[in-house]
View 1 (cartoon, rainbow, N blue to C red):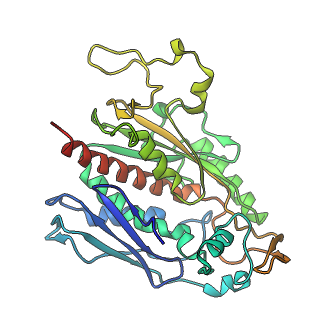
View 2: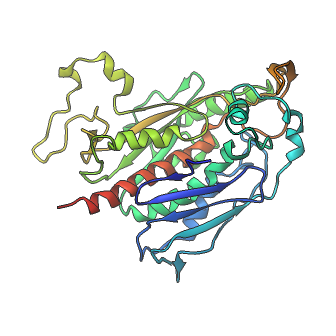
View 3: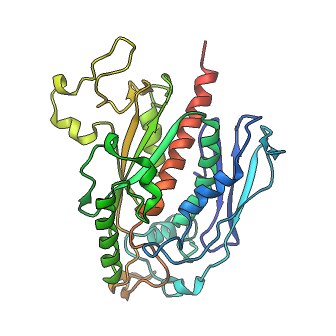
Length: 354
């Protein structure tokens, strides 16, 4: 199986399965001499870990990160940074009922057809638990990106949306509620909706918005490695993601050029920012902002029809511990993938200077 490495210069290779002994990764290309705050890395893991509130999966995992290489006396050495996150609370028997059948809208069927074999325990490598390794690497990348601020938050759950522009939101309130929505009124409605959905045995989707501030001008490598293209690939690689838009996004398709153009100020900044901080695939120094759409979790506690390995129609109902809505725990994952993209492009920009 290929496709387990992300990045060109700042690279993460991840390993592990949802119900294996551990997950982990190797970060390669990180600059030497960066003083790492290991508590800050663990904090990011605590934001992603299961069992953190009543509206997420109740699987209990400490998700403590253990580093094995690439760090000496609290600083990066420039060597590969190896790390492990042990699984401690697997309940693999919860998945015995899907050993010979395929869950609707999961990767079970295509994995079996592609490889002729699959780990049915929690989806194995296709489980969202794989993203734990991304959060570790993203937390390291954040500490490489001195001065750049990356803030993601839940901007919608189902048909409940924040009706304010991000400039009017207080990002310090993102962690003030279990939904990770900085608008308190919207957060209360979202939390209530997720609780209702959970009682119904169903799931619901939502969106995560990310805002990146203080990005220098010049990140991005046209033509095929444009900054927004890298961000799009990063976000679409996250489990359950169905859409990505940056700047004006699809709303921009309704506008005229005279409405959409970002006119310059004398210092090179722009009066508006419908470009979303990126022009021609290169960062222009303005805020980069984008939105990521997550589908409803495919495992529901309701009976559905599916097929088994022989093509027979069978009945299936989800079992085990699952998120009724992924977006609250997806917030640190979106931030981590954004940090990996920016760190990679920052290093690329240094090597491409003439």
